[in-house]
Length: 261
Image 1 (tube, one colour):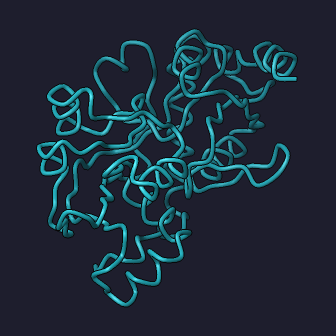
Image 2 (cartoon, helix red, strand yellow; image 1 turned 45 degrees about the vertical axis):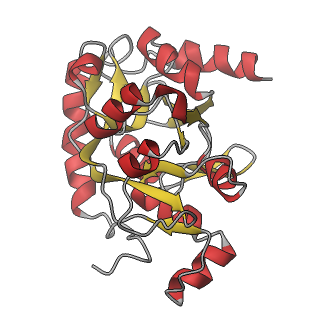
Image 3 (cartoon, rainbow, N blue to C red; image 1 turned 30 degrees about the vertical axis):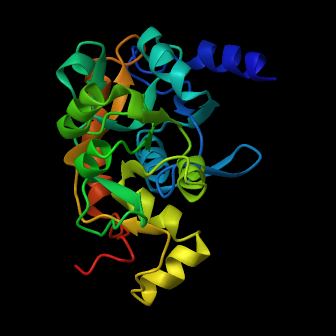
């Protein structure tokens, strides 16, 4: 059933070159990534990034359509113009050659969850794990900053790809990997679904199987990223105006339950 939906959305994807919203703005969905974008039923979506994108689109008179697509295809298809916009994107000079970027709409911290074995503590770093031969679960198609990029070059065989954060937590629980890397808030909220971790963190127990590291691997601004094939620069300028207005009324961002600050 994906092909008919893909073809239909491809036909309506040229939403902004004409400077209007007669057709929907199309965003790709690569799988659940709480709290930012996730599915909760048949063709039902939610999340803080998704809600913001939808509200901005609606303020512009645009409908928002969702195109399910795996993460490998999504970056290729956005560059080709098969859909219009991706959320949760980090700006890089390389990406800027192919895509338009909105103004930043939130900040991101990249964090680390580690196994509590081998004497690891909240002060244990990603470099510590890798230098001892540990394996790290990560979404290899994501950008997690220069520190992670350099460590991936230094220890290429020790990084294990898994797009789904939920599955990476399972890999850590099963001791297939020794650490997992992702957006820190996403890590916190995902670990909240691990009963033993949640209860032991609240008791500040030293016996939990997973530890949320204090290390912040990267800090960056997050943008919406638009295909240059389907969205004109003038459209993104208009989008940014409405985005700024929406951000003024946006509720406070969720915080990690285990951060003291």
